[in-house]
Image (cartoon, rainbow, N blue to C red):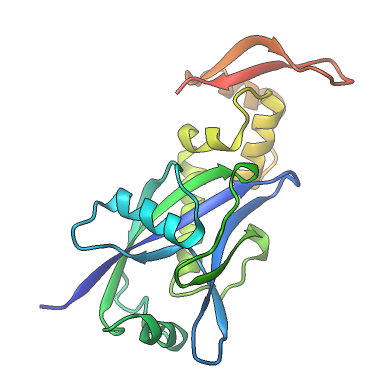
Length: 225
């Protein structure tokens, strides 16, 4: 029987005031020379632990973030995913059996960065938001693949429970379109976008309008989830 460990890796995406999509990464020491490496927040699941609860525990233990809606999006089980030299170096520092196979479950979340202040702990000595376009191609293990898969999943699914976390409780359609364009990485036609949004039951138009703007105030919308 081949020993298999189960882990959780979290793709936490944030939307900032600069209108850029960022991912939360941790830094971890990978050898005795204090060389470091960026990684998604992740760790092994405990033997008797529920997957989602494990994901929440791991995220909190490494970044201090909690009370976040996490959604499972894929499992990653390539038997060679932890076998690279740089990864084995780290595993030898923290694992009793570094050569054992590790299958990981990916969870994704979208958060308003202004509401969360990551604080690194455990084996992470730093946690920081990195612009998606600036992420290096040498993240730990297969985390570049996990991150890319998570973003593609988000673009294909357009999960409104995830997206709602990036917006204020009441927002304009322009704010929503801007967020869509950042997530999809493409420009959308304003008229078609609004036509399609009007068909989504969970997005509700309110009787309120913007205040304190120089242009004609727009109606505010809200999510009814």
